[in-house]
Image (cartoon, each protein chain N blue to C red):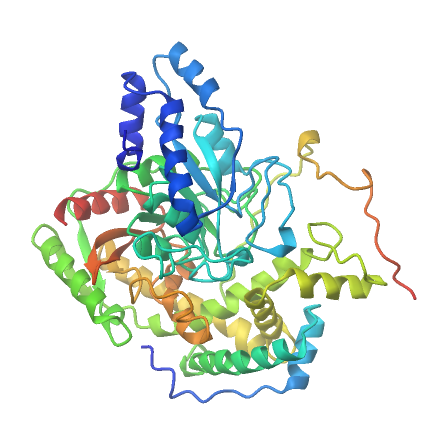
Length: 96
Length: 465
Protein backbone atom coordinates (compact mmCIF):
# COMPACT_ATOMS: atom_id res chain seq x y z
CA UNK A 1 0.00 0.00 0.00
CA UNK A 2 2.86 2.35 0.70
CA UNK A 3 4.54 1.84 -2.61
CA UNK A 4 4.92 5.39 -3.74
CA UNK A 5 8.04 5.14 -5.80
CA UNK A 6 6.23 3.80 -8.83
CA UNK A 7 4.46 7.12 -9.23
CA UNK A 8 6.63 9.63 -11.03
CA UNK A 9 7.22 12.99 -9.43
CA UNK A 10 5.00 15.61 -10.96
CA UNK A 11 7.03 18.57 -11.90
CA UNK A 12 5.65 21.97 -11.10
CA UNK A 13 7.38 25.10 -12.27
CA UNK A 14 8.72 27.81 -10.02
CA UNK A 15 6.44 30.27 -11.81
CA UNK A 16 3.40 28.14 -10.97
CA UNK A 17 4.46 27.96 -7.32
CA UNK A 18 4.85 31.73 -7.22
CA UNK A 19 1.37 32.11 -8.67
CA UNK A 20 -0.17 29.79 -6.06
CA UNK A 21 1.70 31.62 -3.29
CA UNK A 22 0.26 34.87 -4.56
CA UNK A 23 -3.27 33.44 -4.48
CA UNK A 24 -2.67 32.23 -0.91
CA UNK A 25 -1.17 35.63 0.02
CA UNK A 26 2.07 34.03 1.14
CA UNK A 27 5.43 35.51 0.26
CA UNK A 28 8.20 32.92 -0.14
CA UNK A 29 11.92 33.51 0.20
CA UNK A 30 14.18 31.93 -2.42
CA UNK A 31 15.14 29.01 -0.13
CA UNK A 32 11.50 28.42 0.87
CA UNK A 33 10.57 28.43 -2.79
CA UNK A 34 13.07 25.66 -3.43
CA UNK A 35 11.75 23.60 -0.53
CA UNK A 36 8.13 24.03 -1.59
CA UNK A 37 8.98 23.20 -5.19
CA UNK A 38 10.59 19.92 -4.15
CA UNK A 39 7.88 18.89 -1.68
CA UNK A 40 5.07 19.99 -3.96
CA UNK A 41 6.26 17.78 -6.78
CA UNK A 42 6.46 14.80 -4.45
CA UNK A 43 3.02 15.45 -2.99
CA UNK A 44 1.39 15.97 -6.38
CA UNK A 45 3.05 12.74 -7.49
CA UNK A 46 1.38 11.02 -4.56
CA UNK A 47 -1.99 12.52 -5.52
CA UNK A 48 -1.64 10.75 -8.88
CA UNK A 49 -2.85 7.66 -7.02
CA UNK A 50 -6.35 9.07 -7.32
CA UNK A 51 -6.21 8.77 -11.10
CA UNK A 52 -6.42 5.00 -10.65
CA UNK A 53 -9.83 5.28 -9.03
CA UNK A 54 -12.82 4.80 -11.27
CA UNK A 55 -15.09 7.30 -9.60
CA UNK A 56 -17.18 8.13 -12.63
CA UNK A 57 -20.16 6.21 -11.34
CA UNK A 58 -20.10 7.95 -7.95
CA UNK A 59 -22.97 10.37 -7.96
CA UNK A 60 -21.82 13.90 -7.30
CA UNK A 61 -19.64 14.30 -4.30
CA UNK A 62 -20.52 14.14 -0.69
CA UNK A 63 -19.36 17.30 0.92
CA UNK A 64 -20.67 17.67 4.44
CA UNK A 65 -24.30 18.77 4.38
CA UNK A 66 -25.75 22.13 5.22
CA UNK A 67 -26.98 22.56 8.74
CA UNK A 68 -29.46 25.36 9.16
CA UNK A 69 -30.95 26.71 12.34
CA UNK A 70 -33.52 29.26 13.13
CA UNK A 71 -32.25 32.82 13.00
CA UNK A 72 -32.20 34.50 16.37
CA UNK A 73 -30.27 37.17 18.16
CA UNK A 74 -28.42 36.56 21.39
CA UNK A 75 -26.37 39.10 23.24
CA UNK A 76 -22.86 38.02 24.19
CA UNK A 77 -21.22 41.11 25.60
CA UNK A 78 -18.51 39.34 27.57
CA UNK A 79 -17.45 37.33 24.57
CA UNK A 80 -16.64 40.23 22.27
CA UNK A 81 -13.12 40.41 20.99
CA UNK A 82 -11.19 43.22 22.54
CA UNK A 83 -10.75 45.49 19.56
CA UNK A 84 -7.82 47.87 19.69
CA UNK A 85 -10.08 50.75 18.69
CA UNK A 86 -13.08 49.33 20.57
CA UNK A 87 -15.66 49.66 17.83
CA UNK A 88 -13.73 49.25 14.60
CA UNK A 89 -10.62 47.80 12.97
CA UNK A 90 -8.03 50.15 11.58
CA UNK A 91 -6.35 48.93 8.38
CA UNK A 92 -3.48 50.17 6.24
CA UNK A 93 -4.16 52.23 3.16
CA UNK A 94 -5.46 50.30 0.18
CA UNK A 95 -4.46 52.82 -2.48
CA UNK A 96 -0.92 54.05 -2.79
CA UNK B 1 0.85 10.11 46.97
CA UNK B 2 1.55 8.96 43.40
CA UNK B 3 -0.99 10.96 41.44
CA UNK B 4 0.12 9.58 38.08
CA UNK B 5 -1.58 6.25 38.90
CA UNK B 6 -4.93 7.86 39.70
CA UNK B 7 -7.84 7.42 37.32
CA UNK B 8 -10.81 9.80 37.31
CA UNK B 9 -12.90 7.43 39.42
CA UNK B 10 -10.07 6.91 41.92
CA UNK B 11 -9.71 10.67 42.36
CA UNK B 12 -13.48 11.01 42.74
CA UNK B 13 -13.63 8.25 45.36
CA UNK B 14 -10.64 9.64 47.23
CA UNK B 15 -12.19 13.10 47.36
CA UNK B 16 -15.53 11.68 48.53
CA UNK B 17 -13.86 9.63 51.25
CA UNK B 18 -11.66 12.60 52.22
CA UNK B 19 -8.51 10.57 51.61
CA UNK B 20 -7.00 13.62 49.95
CA UNK B 21 -7.96 17.14 48.90
CA UNK B 22 -8.04 18.75 45.46
CA UNK B 23 -5.16 20.91 46.64
CA UNK B 24 -3.03 17.81 47.28
CA UNK B 25 -3.98 16.31 43.91
CA UNK B 26 -3.08 19.50 42.08
CA UNK B 27 0.20 19.76 44.01
CA UNK B 28 1.03 16.17 43.06
CA UNK B 29 0.56 16.83 39.35
CA UNK B 30 2.32 20.20 39.59
CA UNK B 31 5.31 18.44 41.12
CA UNK B 32 5.41 16.05 38.16
CA UNK B 33 5.20 19.02 35.81
CA UNK B 34 8.10 20.81 37.46
CA UNK B 35 10.21 17.63 37.41
CA UNK B 36 9.42 16.45 33.90
CA UNK B 37 8.75 19.48 31.74
CA UNK B 38 12.41 20.21 31.14
CA UNK B 39 12.67 16.94 29.24
CA UNK B 40 9.21 16.61 27.78
CA UNK B 41 7.95 20.12 26.98
CA UNK B 42 4.30 19.11 26.85
CA UNK B 43 3.00 22.49 28.04
CA UNK B 44 3.12 25.83 26.24
CA UNK B 45 1.41 27.69 29.04
CA UNK B 46 0.63 26.81 32.64
CA UNK B 47 -2.46 28.08 34.41
CA UNK B 48 -1.23 30.07 37.44
CA UNK B 49 -4.66 30.51 38.99
CA UNK B 50 -6.08 27.04 39.41
CA UNK B 51 -9.20 27.11 41.61
CA UNK B 52 -8.37 24.17 43.91
CA UNK B 53 -9.25 26.05 47.11
CA UNK B 54 -12.71 26.96 45.85
CA UNK B 55 -13.29 23.39 44.74
CA UNK B 56 -12.17 22.00 48.12
CA UNK B 57 -14.65 24.36 49.81
CA UNK B 58 -17.34 23.18 47.39
CA UNK B 59 -16.54 19.53 48.14
CA UNK B 60 -16.67 20.10 51.90
CA UNK B 61 -20.21 21.46 51.48
CA UNK B 62 -21.57 18.89 48.98
CA UNK B 63 -22.08 15.18 49.54
CA UNK B 64 -22.32 14.40 45.86
CA UNK B 65 -20.46 15.98 42.99
CA UNK B 66 -19.66 15.10 39.35
CA UNK B 67 -16.90 12.62 38.48
CA UNK B 68 -14.63 15.30 37.01
CA UNK B 69 -14.79 17.62 40.04
CA UNK B 70 -11.26 18.39 41.16
CA UNK B 71 -9.70 16.27 38.42
CA UNK B 72 -6.68 18.02 36.81
CA UNK B 73 -6.54 18.12 33.02
CA UNK B 74 -4.77 19.87 30.16
CA UNK B 75 -6.07 21.35 26.90
CA UNK B 76 -4.48 21.29 23.47
CA UNK B 77 -3.54 24.90 22.76
CA UNK B 78 -6.11 25.14 19.99
CA UNK B 79 -9.03 25.10 22.45
CA UNK B 80 -10.12 28.42 23.96
CA UNK B 81 -9.76 28.96 27.70
CA UNK B 82 -11.08 32.43 28.38
CA UNK B 83 -8.47 35.03 29.30
CA UNK B 84 -5.55 32.67 28.63
CA UNK B 85 -3.23 32.69 25.61
CA UNK B 86 -4.23 30.36 22.77
CA UNK B 87 -1.36 30.06 20.29
CA UNK B 88 -2.28 27.07 18.08
CA UNK B 89 1.48 26.43 18.19
CA UNK B 90 1.99 29.38 15.84
CA UNK B 91 3.90 32.67 15.87
CA UNK B 92 0.73 34.04 14.28
CA UNK B 93 -1.13 33.70 17.58
CA UNK B 94 1.84 33.93 19.95
CA UNK B 95 0.18 36.61 22.08
CA UNK B 96 -3.46 35.96 21.29
CA UNK B 97 -5.73 35.81 24.34
CA UNK B 98 -8.84 33.63 24.02
CA UNK B 99 -11.86 35.95 24.37
CA UNK B 100 -14.26 33.24 25.54
CA UNK B 101 -14.41 29.59 26.68
CA UNK B 102 -14.88 26.82 24.13
CA UNK B 103 -18.09 24.87 24.71
CA UNK B 104 -16.06 21.82 25.79
CA UNK B 105 -14.21 24.02 28.31
CA UNK B 106 -17.51 25.37 29.64
CA UNK B 107 -18.60 21.78 30.19
CA UNK B 108 -15.37 20.91 32.03
CA UNK B 109 -15.65 24.05 34.17
CA UNK B 110 -19.27 23.23 35.01
CA UNK B 111 -18.07 19.94 36.49
CA UNK B 112 -15.23 21.83 38.22
CA UNK B 113 -12.36 20.03 36.55
CA UNK B 114 -9.01 21.79 37.17
CA UNK B 115 -7.36 23.01 33.96
CA UNK B 116 -3.60 22.94 34.58
CA UNK B 117 -2.45 24.37 31.26
CA UNK B 118 -2.34 24.42 27.49
CA UNK B 119 -0.38 21.79 25.60
CA UNK B 120 1.95 21.85 22.63
CA UNK B 121 0.89 20.88 19.11
CA UNK B 122 1.92 21.00 15.49
CA UNK B 123 1.19 24.51 14.24
CA UNK B 124 -2.57 24.83 13.61
CA UNK B 125 -2.76 21.04 14.22
CA UNK B 126 -0.98 20.36 10.93
CA UNK B 127 1.41 17.50 11.49
CA UNK B 128 1.93 14.04 12.95
CA UNK B 129 4.86 14.61 15.31
CA UNK B 130 4.52 17.96 17.16
CA UNK B 131 7.81 18.93 15.51
CA UNK B 132 5.98 21.66 13.59
CA UNK B 133 5.25 23.71 16.71
CA UNK B 134 6.70 27.21 16.42
CA UNK B 135 7.82 26.83 20.04
CA UNK B 136 9.82 23.61 19.76
CA UNK B 137 9.10 19.89 19.74
CA UNK B 138 7.54 17.88 22.56
CA UNK B 139 9.38 14.67 23.46
CA UNK B 140 7.93 11.22 23.98
CA UNK B 141 7.87 10.28 27.70
CA UNK B 142 8.92 6.71 26.77
CA UNK B 143 12.04 7.91 24.93
CA UNK B 144 13.09 11.56 24.87
CA UNK B 145 14.79 11.12 21.50
CA UNK B 146 11.46 10.28 19.90
CA UNK B 147 8.38 12.26 18.91
CA UNK B 148 5.15 11.94 20.91
CA UNK B 149 3.13 11.85 17.67
CA UNK B 150 0.85 14.65 16.69
CA UNK B 151 -0.71 16.92 16.31
CA UNK B 152 -2.01 16.56 19.89
CA UNK B 153 1.49 15.47 21.00
CA UNK B 154 1.63 17.74 24.04
CA UNK B 155 -1.71 16.42 25.26
CA UNK B 156 -0.70 12.77 24.90
CA UNK B 157 2.71 13.38 26.50
CA UNK B 158 1.16 15.28 29.42
CA UNK B 159 -1.10 12.32 30.23
CA UNK B 160 1.53 9.64 29.61
CA UNK B 161 4.07 11.39 31.87
CA UNK B 162 1.62 11.86 34.74
CA UNK B 163 1.56 15.66 34.43
CA UNK B 164 -2.26 15.62 34.41
CA UNK B 165 -5.06 13.06 34.63
CA UNK B 166 -6.56 13.63 31.20
CA UNK B 167 -6.39 15.99 28.24
CA UNK B 168 -8.53 17.22 25.39
CA UNK B 169 -7.05 17.12 21.90
CA UNK B 170 -8.45 17.51 18.40
CA UNK B 171 -8.41 14.95 15.60
CA UNK B 172 -8.62 15.84 11.90
CA UNK B 173 -6.75 12.87 10.40
CA UNK B 174 -5.53 11.02 13.49
CA UNK B 175 -4.26 13.82 15.73
CA UNK B 176 -5.73 12.31 18.92
CA UNK B 177 -5.34 8.59 18.17
CA UNK B 178 -1.84 8.63 16.68
CA UNK B 179 -0.14 10.48 19.60
CA UNK B 180 -2.15 8.32 22.04
CA UNK B 181 -0.72 5.26 20.30
CA UNK B 182 2.86 6.64 20.35
CA UNK B 183 2.64 7.58 24.04
CA UNK B 184 0.84 4.46 25.29
CA UNK B 185 -2.40 6.13 26.37
CA UNK B 186 -6.05 6.02 25.26
CA UNK B 187 -7.30 8.48 22.62
CA UNK B 188 -10.83 8.82 21.26
CA UNK B 189 -11.99 10.57 18.11
CA UNK B 190 -15.75 10.82 18.52
CA UNK B 191 -18.28 10.57 15.68
CA UNK B 192 -18.36 13.70 13.49
CA UNK B 193 -20.92 15.95 15.17
CA UNK B 194 -20.79 14.26 18.60
CA UNK B 195 -18.79 17.06 20.26
CA UNK B 196 -19.06 20.83 19.74
CA UNK B 197 -16.12 22.61 18.11
CA UNK B 198 -17.22 26.08 19.20
CA UNK B 199 -14.13 27.84 20.52
CA UNK B 200 -11.74 25.40 18.86
CA UNK B 201 -9.48 26.93 16.21
CA UNK B 202 -10.58 25.42 12.88
CA UNK B 203 -8.28 23.38 10.66
CA UNK B 204 -10.53 21.33 8.32
CA UNK B 205 -14.12 21.81 9.37
CA UNK B 206 -15.61 18.74 7.72
CA UNK B 207 -13.12 16.49 9.55
CA UNK B 208 -12.22 18.17 12.89
CA UNK B 209 -13.46 16.61 16.16
CA UNK B 210 -12.44 17.22 19.77
CA UNK B 211 -11.63 14.10 21.76
CA UNK B 212 -10.24 12.95 25.12
CA UNK B 213 -6.78 11.52 25.78
CA UNK B 214 -6.75 9.47 28.98
CA UNK B 215 -4.99 6.69 30.85
CA UNK B 216 -7.90 4.24 30.70
CA UNK B 217 -10.89 3.47 28.48
CA UNK B 218 -13.25 4.18 31.37
CA UNK B 219 -11.69 7.65 31.74
CA UNK B 220 -12.22 8.32 28.02
CA UNK B 221 -15.85 7.30 28.44
CA UNK B 222 -16.32 9.66 31.40
CA UNK B 223 -14.76 12.63 29.60
CA UNK B 224 -16.68 11.89 26.39
CA UNK B 225 -19.97 11.76 28.30
CA UNK B 226 -19.15 15.20 29.73
CA UNK B 227 -18.18 16.96 26.50
CA UNK B 228 -20.63 15.40 23.99
CA UNK B 229 -23.95 16.84 22.86
CA UNK B 230 -25.69 19.38 20.69
CA UNK B 231 -24.44 22.95 20.87
CA UNK B 232 -26.41 25.72 19.13
CA UNK B 233 -23.06 27.42 18.50
CA UNK B 234 -21.77 24.53 16.35
CA UNK B 235 -24.34 23.78 13.68
CA UNK B 236 -22.75 20.41 12.88
CA UNK B 237 -23.20 19.11 16.42
CA UNK B 238 -26.07 16.73 17.08
CA UNK B 239 -27.96 15.25 19.99
CA UNK B 240 -27.87 11.51 20.10
CA UNK B 241 -29.25 9.00 22.55
CA UNK B 242 -26.25 6.77 23.22
CA UNK B 243 -28.20 4.00 24.88
CA UNK B 244 -26.58 0.66 25.55
CA UNK B 245 -24.43 -1.62 23.46
CA UNK B 246 -24.69 -5.16 22.10
CA UNK B 247 -23.37 -7.93 24.33
CA UNK B 248 -22.36 -10.31 21.58
CA UNK B 249 -20.35 -8.55 18.97
CA UNK B 250 -18.58 -9.46 15.79
CA UNK B 251 -15.27 -7.84 14.96
CA UNK B 252 -13.92 -7.21 11.49
CA UNK B 253 -10.23 -6.98 10.65
CA UNK B 254 -9.47 -5.31 7.30
CA UNK B 255 -6.79 -7.13 5.33
CA UNK B 256 -5.69 -3.85 3.70
CA UNK B 257 -4.34 -2.63 7.05
CA UNK B 258 -1.77 -5.40 7.41
CA UNK B 259 0.02 -5.27 4.07
CA UNK B 260 3.41 -3.77 3.22
CA UNK B 261 4.34 -0.54 4.97
CA UNK B 262 3.50 -1.80 8.45
CA UNK B 263 6.39 -2.23 10.87
CA UNK B 264 6.84 -5.99 11.54
CA UNK B 265 7.02 -5.37 15.31
CA UNK B 266 3.70 -3.49 15.31
CA UNK B 267 2.11 -6.19 13.16
CA UNK B 268 3.26 -8.91 15.55
CA UNK B 269 1.89 -7.13 18.65
CA UNK B 270 -1.48 -6.37 17.04
CA UNK B 271 -1.86 -9.88 15.62
CA UNK B 272 -1.11 -11.49 18.96
CA UNK B 273 -3.73 -9.28 20.66
CA UNK B 274 -6.26 -10.14 17.95
CA UNK B 275 -5.56 -13.81 18.54
CA UNK B 276 -6.31 -13.42 22.25
CA UNK B 277 -9.47 -11.42 21.54
CA UNK B 278 -10.53 -14.06 19.01
CA UNK B 279 -10.88 -16.55 21.85
CA UNK B 280 -13.61 -14.41 23.42
CA UNK B 281 -15.24 -12.67 20.46
CA UNK B 282 -15.92 -13.68 16.89
CA UNK B 283 -13.44 -12.11 14.48
CA UNK B 284 -13.66 -12.18 10.72
CA UNK B 285 -11.58 -10.80 7.86
CA UNK B 286 -13.13 -7.92 5.95
CA UNK B 287 -12.05 -5.76 3.04
CA UNK B 288 -11.93 -1.97 2.76
CA UNK B 289 -10.78 -1.87 -0.86
CA UNK B 290 -10.34 1.91 -1.21
CA UNK B 291 -8.04 2.24 1.81
CA UNK B 292 -4.96 3.03 -0.25
CA UNK B 293 -6.60 6.12 -1.75
CA UNK B 294 -7.69 7.59 1.58
CA UNK B 295 -4.55 9.58 2.33
CA UNK B 296 -4.41 11.24 -1.06
CA UNK B 297 -8.06 12.22 -0.65
CA UNK B 298 -7.42 13.43 2.90
CA UNK B 299 -4.36 15.49 1.87
CA UNK B 300 -6.45 17.33 -0.68
CA UNK B 301 -9.61 17.89 1.38
CA UNK B 302 -7.91 18.95 4.63
CA UNK B 303 -5.51 21.55 3.12
CA UNK B 304 -8.29 22.88 0.88
CA UNK B 305 -10.46 23.58 3.88
CA UNK B 306 -7.47 24.92 5.80
CA UNK B 307 -6.67 27.38 3.02
CA UNK B 308 -10.13 28.82 3.53
CA UNK B 309 -10.19 28.61 7.36
CA UNK B 310 -6.77 30.24 7.72
CA UNK B 311 -7.59 33.12 5.39
CA UNK B 312 -8.74 34.96 8.53
CA UNK B 313 -5.13 35.42 9.68
CA UNK B 314 -4.63 38.58 7.72
CA UNK B 315 -2.80 40.80 10.22
CA UNK B 316 -5.93 42.76 10.99
CA UNK B 317 -8.35 40.77 13.07
CA UNK B 318 -6.20 38.22 14.87
CA UNK B 319 -2.83 38.04 16.50
CA UNK B 320 0.39 38.88 14.72
CA UNK B 321 0.47 41.89 12.43
CA UNK B 322 3.49 43.07 10.50
CA UNK B 323 3.75 46.70 11.58
CA UNK B 324 6.19 47.77 8.88
CA UNK B 325 3.99 47.06 5.88
CA UNK B 326 3.18 50.08 3.72
CA UNK B 327 -0.22 49.14 2.43
CA UNK B 328 -2.97 46.58 2.92
CA UNK B 329 -1.76 44.10 0.31
CA UNK B 330 1.77 44.11 1.77
CA UNK B 331 0.28 43.68 5.23
CA UNK B 332 -1.42 40.42 4.17
CA UNK B 333 1.74 39.07 2.54
CA UNK B 334 4.17 40.17 5.24
CA UNK B 335 1.98 39.00 8.12
CA UNK B 336 1.31 35.58 6.63
CA UNK B 337 4.89 35.09 5.46
CA UNK B 338 6.32 35.86 8.88
CA UNK B 339 3.50 34.50 11.04
CA UNK B 340 3.06 31.04 9.52
CA UNK B 341 5.63 28.26 9.71
CA UNK B 342 6.94 26.11 6.87
CA UNK B 343 4.44 23.24 7.10
CA UNK B 344 1.41 25.52 7.35
CA UNK B 345 2.54 27.53 4.33
CA UNK B 346 3.02 24.33 2.36
CA UNK B 347 -0.42 23.01 3.23
CA UNK B 348 -2.12 26.32 2.49
CA UNK B 349 -0.44 26.24 -0.91
CA UNK B 350 -1.56 22.64 -1.57
CA UNK B 351 -5.11 23.64 -0.64
CA UNK B 352 -5.01 26.75 -2.78
CA UNK B 353 -3.65 24.71 -5.68
CA UNK B 354 -6.34 22.00 -5.33
CA UNK B 355 -9.07 24.62 -5.34
CA UNK B 356 -7.65 26.77 -8.11
CA UNK B 357 -9.30 26.86 -11.50
CA UNK B 358 -8.04 24.12 -13.76
CA UNK B 359 -7.30 21.75 -10.89
CA UNK B 360 -10.59 21.86 -8.95
CA UNK B 361 -12.16 18.87 -10.77
CA UNK B 362 -8.95 16.88 -10.95
CA UNK B 363 -8.12 17.23 -7.26
CA UNK B 364 -10.81 18.62 -4.97
CA UNK B 365 -13.86 17.07 -6.64
CA UNK B 366 -12.10 13.77 -7.15
CA UNK B 367 -11.03 13.71 -3.51
CA UNK B 368 -14.66 14.00 -2.39
CA UNK B 369 -15.71 11.23 -4.77
CA UNK B 370 -13.05 9.02 -3.26
CA UNK B 371 -14.27 10.04 0.20
CA UNK B 372 -17.66 8.64 -0.75
CA UNK B 373 -16.16 5.35 -1.87
CA UNK B 374 -14.25 5.08 1.41
CA UNK B 375 -17.38 5.76 3.40
CA UNK B 376 -19.22 3.09 1.41
CA UNK B 377 -16.46 0.58 2.15
CA UNK B 378 -17.08 1.11 5.85
CA UNK B 379 -20.88 0.99 5.47
CA UNK B 380 -20.63 -2.33 3.66
CA UNK B 381 -18.26 -3.72 6.28
CA UNK B 382 -20.59 -2.65 9.09
CA UNK B 383 -23.42 -4.69 7.53
CA UNK B 384 -21.42 -7.76 8.55
CA UNK B 385 -19.54 -6.68 11.70
CA UNK B 386 -20.14 -4.41 14.69
CA UNK B 387 -16.63 -3.04 15.17
CA UNK B 388 -13.43 -2.90 13.14
CA UNK B 389 -10.02 -3.51 14.73
CA UNK B 390 -6.82 -2.21 13.13
CA UNK B 391 -3.40 -1.01 14.23
CA UNK B 392 -3.59 2.74 15.03
CA UNK B 393 -0.31 3.48 13.23
CA UNK B 394 2.00 1.55 10.92
CA UNK B 395 4.95 2.20 13.26
CA UNK B 396 5.86 3.06 16.83
CA UNK B 397 7.14 6.54 17.76
CA UNK B 398 9.89 7.61 15.35
CA UNK B 399 12.96 9.67 16.17
CA UNK B 400 12.81 13.46 16.22
CA UNK B 401 13.94 14.69 12.80
CA UNK B 402 13.67 11.24 11.21
CA UNK B 403 10.71 11.98 8.95
CA UNK B 404 10.65 15.74 8.74
CA UNK B 405 12.69 15.77 5.53
CA UNK B 406 10.36 13.59 3.49
CA UNK B 407 6.79 14.91 3.20
CA UNK B 408 5.36 11.57 2.05
CA UNK B 409 6.80 9.44 4.85
CA UNK B 410 5.27 11.87 7.39
CA UNK B 411 1.90 11.69 5.63
CA UNK B 412 1.99 7.89 5.87
CA UNK B 413 1.89 8.07 9.68
CA UNK B 414 -1.84 8.84 9.30
CA UNK B 415 -2.61 5.98 6.93
CA UNK B 416 -4.84 4.00 9.33
CA UNK B 417 -6.47 6.97 11.02
CA UNK B 418 -7.36 9.44 8.23
CA UNK B 419 -9.91 7.13 6.51
CA UNK B 420 -11.96 7.20 9.72
CA UNK B 421 -12.20 11.01 9.64
CA UNK B 422 -13.21 10.92 5.98
CA UNK B 423 -16.04 8.53 6.89
CA UNK B 424 -17.01 10.60 9.97
CA UNK B 425 -16.83 7.54 12.22
CA UNK B 426 -15.83 7.22 15.88
CA UNK B 427 -12.56 5.43 16.69
CA UNK B 428 -10.35 4.93 19.71
CA UNK B 429 -6.71 3.97 20.13
CA UNK B 430 -6.07 1.63 23.07
CA UNK B 431 -2.56 0.59 24.18
CA UNK B 432 -2.16 -3.10 23.31
CA UNK B 433 1.48 -3.88 23.99
CA UNK B 434 5.02 -2.82 23.15
CA UNK B 435 7.41 -3.33 20.30
CA UNK B 436 11.09 -2.85 21.18
CA UNK B 437 10.05 -1.02 24.32
CA UNK B 438 7.74 1.43 22.57
CA UNK B 439 3.93 1.47 22.90
CA UNK B 440 1.67 0.06 20.17
CA UNK B 441 -1.95 1.15 19.81
CA UNK B 442 -4.95 -0.85 18.66
CA UNK B 443 -7.59 1.18 16.82
CA UNK B 444 -11.23 0.29 17.41
CA UNK B 445 -13.54 1.79 14.79
CA UNK B 446 -17.30 1.92 15.40
CA UNK B 447 -20.52 2.70 13.56
CA UNK B 448 -21.68 6.34 13.69
CA UNK B 449 -22.47 7.20 17.33
CA UNK B 450 -21.32 3.72 18.37
CA UNK B 451 -19.02 5.10 21.07
CA UNK B 452 -20.54 2.86 23.76
CA UNK B 453 -19.66 -0.31 21.84
CA UNK B 454 -16.13 1.05 21.34
CA UNK B 455 -15.76 1.62 25.10
CA UNK B 456 -16.98 -1.92 25.93
CA UNK B 457 -14.56 -3.45 23.43
CA UNK B 458 -11.76 -1.21 24.71
CA UNK B 459 -12.33 -2.43 28.26
CA UNK B 460 -12.14 -6.00 27.00
CA UNK B 461 -8.80 -5.24 25.33
CA UNK B 462 -7.51 -3.73 28.59
CA UNK B 463 -8.52 -6.91 30.45
CA UNK B 464 -6.94 -9.26 27.93
CA UNK B 465 -3.50 -7.68 27.60
